[in-house]
Length: 118
Length: 153
Image (tube, rainbow over all chains, first blue to last red; front, side):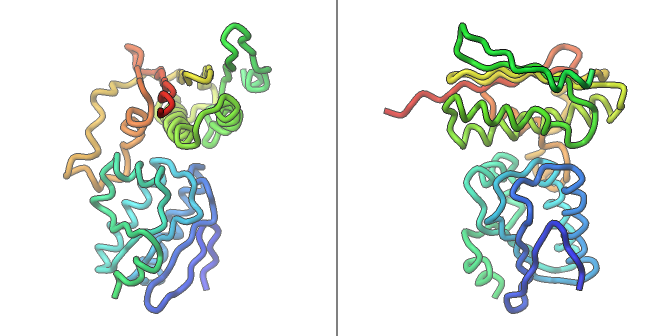
């Protein structure tokens, strides 16, 4: 069992569902830690189906976006699948402005995202 | 001049607004020394949560840029943040002690070939969420302004 400080993970079938501990993802040190924990899911734990549930996230900075992009690339390289859900409108706008909504597979809620893995 | 961070708020009775000038140390996370109060004041002046989110993001990105890229985390340098908030306007100026940069030279992060590059989105987010953003000629100071959207109806 790997101890995580920035994320909570659970399994729904084959899908690893990630919830974020921090409501505001902006502190540089926390973002580094968050990145390491997310990358570990792919690189150490070999998880192939990952859902990031943003329900608890109120704010994230561009440094956090960078970690999500790197995670997406790592998952694609490992031939896995990454989806995101429960993103509040303000953060969705950030994804739209940066056109990352074209890069990421974004779903409305967790159930819809889980279904999309099938 | 780290003690400036503890300087009192300067009420501006003529406009009914709030203003504050703070020198931040060039340390990661230093933005919190001014951000909490700025967000609180935006709320006090009746700004909508959506606008506060955008201002928060823009100012955070600008301060991180100033500390990390401008001052290169040099403990001998500080970042000056000047804020002014009224019910109609939020104006934040962030100045670092670095050599400056050319904002026009920042590549467009939304071009297909750059979409998956993990950095370089801060300036675009500032432009999107603020009404105006302007750099000085040297490129070490950015002025962010947001005008309150008129009430619907």
